[in-house]
Every structure is written in C-alpha cells, then in structure tokens.
Length: 271
Image 1 (cartoon, rainbow, N blue to C red):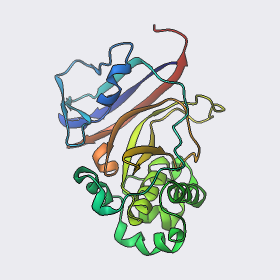
Image 2 (cartoon, helix red, strand yellow):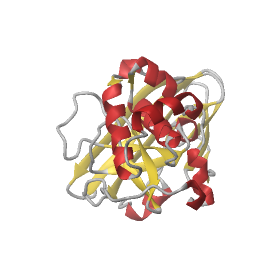
Image 3 (cartoon, rainbow, N blue to C red):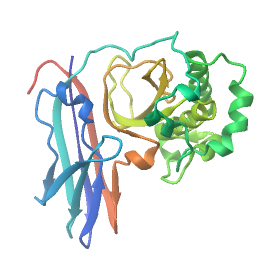
C-alpha cells in the first residue's frame, strides 16, 4: 500500500527567530520511502538536520522577518496491515530490562508518575501483568478523556488530563504512558501521521497524531488510547519520553503559527 503524506506549515515573525522542528519521517521508515523526503522553505533559508538522543531527525532553521513556510510532500510504502497484536506478550521484571529501556519507566515533564502511582495501582493492580494490563490501561484512558481540539493546551500534563477528563491525542497518550510506567511497564511517547485509512473519514481537518509504545516480551508494541483499536498506516516521525522530546516545532523567540495543513492519503501510484 502507498501513502502520500506531507504538510504546509506557516509561521509569522517580525524578527529573526531560531526554530527547532521535528517534522521528518523517522529514520526507521526511510527504507519505505518511494519518493524523496525533503523539507522545503519559502522563502529559501539555510536549513540542516541532526539526530537527537532518541534517534529522531531534528531540523534547525531560522524564521526570517516576514515569516516562513515549511513544506513537505512524499510517498511511502506501508504494509497495509493493522497494528500487530500480541496478546501473550509478557511484562519483564525490572531487573531484566535492558539499560536503555529503563528511561521509559521514569517520570518526565508531562508524565508525573509520582502523582498517579496510587491511582494506577488501585485501578490496574488486580489485572494480570503484560498485554492484558496494558489493554486495560488503554481502554480506561480512552473512556476517561473526552476528545476535543478545543481542550488542547501546550502545558497540559497527564495529571491535568486525568483531573479534567478532556484533551487531544497527546493527552490520551501522556495519561496512558504515565499509568503504564506507574505499573512498571516501560512506555514511550510517539508522534506521526495517521490518516483515515480503513476507517470512516473524519469531518475534522487532518492533523498529526500521538500514540505510544510499551516494552513487552523483549520488544516494543504499539498502542493508541485515543482510538482504542488497531489502525492501518501509521508513519512514525518521532518518539521519546513525552511531547517535550517530540515537539513538532520549538521556537526560541516570538513566532506565531499562522497556517497549518497536513495531508495523509492512500494512493494508487507514486506521483
């Protein structure tokens, strides 16, 4: 299956404003690209990439006075299969976890394990560890939060989402990640493209999406508390401890988001 995806994102600025963007397809998906993946700028300005500590491609650019548009359009091949399901996946004792996985048990900026630990154990302590426990956390989070774009704010944490019971996909992911970590299940936050493939089309404009991975049976497994069911066509852009590590853009000065369009569609051929 082929998916054509990309975006046009415009920023307004009156003075030169440095920016860090995580808007590229994750290197793990580069082998699937069927057309070049290249971020372009209008007007043309210097731009370059580097890999961060989590293996994400980060882009450095300066928004000039008058503003800047970042654009990308590419075609990628996908298996066309639903997210893999592994109901017999086991939870590892902490002492058996790889060193690099331990990071994803710790509290982080948006995932306050200290504030939600007691809640997590009271809700899920009776559920058998492993896949069943994660599924229970995902289902509970899905029903606990009311989705709505008007509920979004950049400072909202997992604790806030739990208390307010409202949010967007990143809030679903943050809460589920936090509850998993409280139950000693390593969990990492993910962001990327997720089009309406294999599901009824949404009436809302296309956006990027957030989901999460958990470490079970020696590998990472994808879960989605926002939708609460397996999906087709995820295109990973970045992963990390939470949205701090995967922010689409971070500006170091006064710049305003003035335009935002994302597209993700199944296509028949490259072109």
